[in-house]
Image (tube, rainbow, N blue to C red; front, side, top):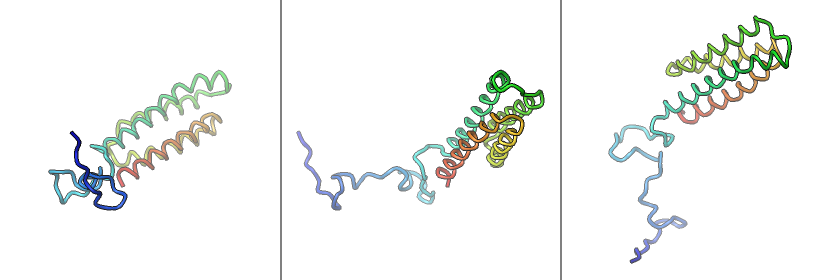
Length: 149
């Protein structure tokens, strides 16, 4: 048995689509009508954004720690001070990844990217890593701005 088709309520509209609510277009059914509509379809956008920032910093810390030996072998002269700076930056990234619930952690993450670029004065490969992770961090900030407004 076939269903009778309903005429579209507006030109170009799919039949039966007028009664469906688009995601993010208004308050959820049964929700508080005074609550503003969510900008994204995420259940908890703040948590998603925090996870993005924490994941970015955790990956940065891992890459920094794993980069020490190849830099020493291939790049040659990596002093004890430079290794200490890389380890300190990796520890700072891990600590910040755990503190992403705090609003200042995003600003501190931005400062961390700048410090990694400055570490490029110790070895050129640290500068390259700093630029790459600064671009990734910039994208994470962009996603945060788009999702949270």
